[in-house]
Amino acid sequence: MAGKILTVVETDAGRVRDYSYELVTLARELAQATGGTACAAVLGDDPVAAATQVAGHGVETVYAVKDPALAAYTADGWVAALKKLIADEGVEFVLFSHTPLGWDAAPRLSAVHGLPALTEVVAVEDGGKVWTRLMFNGKFQVKMSLEGTPAVVTVQKGAFAPCEEQGDGAVREVAAGLEPTALRQKYVETTSEPAEGKVDLASADIIVAGGRSLGSMEKFGIIKELADALGGQVGASRPVTDAGWLPHEHQVGSSGITVKPKLYIASGISGAIQHIVGMKQSGYIVAINKDKEAPIFEVADVCVIGDQFEIVPALTKAILEARGHG
Amino acid sequence: MKIVVCVKQVPDSDAALAVNADRTWIVDSGINFELNPYDRYALEEALRIKEAGEGEVVAVSLGPARAAQVLKTCLATGADRAIHLKDEAFQGGDPWANAQALAAAIRTVEPDLVLCGFQANDDTLAQTPVLLAEMLGMPHATGAMKIEKTDTGVRVARELEADRREVVDLPLPAVITVQTGINEPRYASIKGIMAAKRKEMKTPGPADLGIDPSQVGAAGSRLRFFDLAVPPKKEGGEVLTGSTEEIAVALVKRIRENTGVL
Image (cartoon, rainbow over all chains, first blue to last red; front, side, top):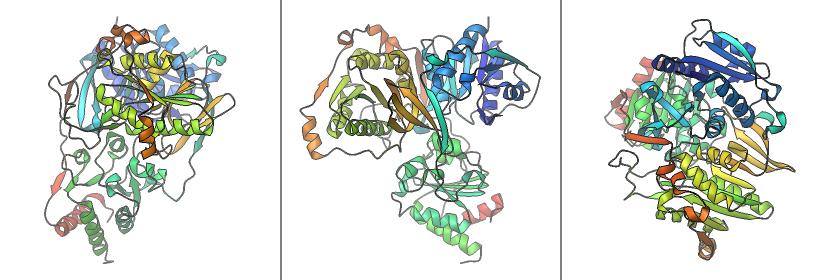
């Protein structure tokens, strides 16, 4: 008998995360291919309101898994509650987003079933028997198949379109039955890193981003000058902020900020998956890179293959002239 | 505190890579390898924790003979001893089989803490440490940007999206994966390189660790990888050519016509 396909929903302050709806699209695709049913789970101390939001999105059942110990995420809490749900409901596929929650919980959940997980997938075929993911910074893709069930999967953000509102699924409240003393991680708090400047990349219209290939904090100045000429914000790939050339709030990508400006200029950024996930929805993308094979060119609208130390200052000058400041 | 650091040898990030004949992995001859960048931060964190108190740092790696190089780097940088799982039976495994082998080796150390890089730069699967934690019966936390010793264990700040951190307390022993940027990794000194030559590097096989060879390597794998290929090129954008000045002018025109921000 075909089993259930369970989407593990993430919420932020009671609101369902946009990327959880991308998982529902995949769950519905798998349900169609396998003859199974698409379901979802919202875990929390008060999950019903969020579960109700998901119920109108083409899933048959949304399990509102309720327990005081699920008030905040812990790996042990999530894994114990989902393990019980999988056993009780006959779940064949468990879908997480590849997020700090997903990559923390999914491999543990697969491991308690004696299996590895299928991490950061971007596509599926053959009714969930074959999955595709990227490797080597996006230079290669590989297919994988897993022996055994349940298949616990994490899905790259943006790999599937979010599902539209449709249908009228049922919300079912279930008790997680957790033993609080068995949960080894204790949630303390969620903190925000103090912002060092006035940077709001998420709502910026123009972002000029630079990568490690700029070589130093001083040379990164050409990126700042172009951003200033355009009246935009400065973004960066992770190595730049790790090296301390810019505060972490400038980091664009899966572990930083997801941005959607009208114009995104990427200079000297090769386009590791972690970066592309954070910027590919930008309105218009200009990529400047000396390597014509750089993956960033695949998502760019305009590609310049050349030396950023020549192109970027020339572009800054041309922008200033076009704006009448030259 | 006794700390195990798991490290992996990965192709240099600038290496020119080609797909192997059976399309399961890359051709690993004729390219340079390096210590996985994430693991450098895990090693540094282990050394700092050790230096703040006392104890031992044991570097463990699974990989072919060439992977001894990254363990030498760890020893030269300050690790006290190393375990290299280089037996043929351990090679070619998936994260499950690799975690089985690592778990068997780590049990012989009886550590208080196991530190790993958040992911390996080659496959970026980001799951072996978590599987390992389950096999060792230890709690885990991934993506640490801060690790502090407490009276009862450790307090870990996990990196979330948009510059937020989730702070969680864990009892020891535990497995923690470390994000890049948590610290500034040191480099080996000449003195460290000399000292490393006298440090222990064990190379136990499956029998030494009391594990059945069918549980590790390719035989112990549950995840199969195939059809490694260059991804189909998406319809890329327009490529601008010409002199630097011509390109700059063309870019201004494109930006003006397509974005409304100029």
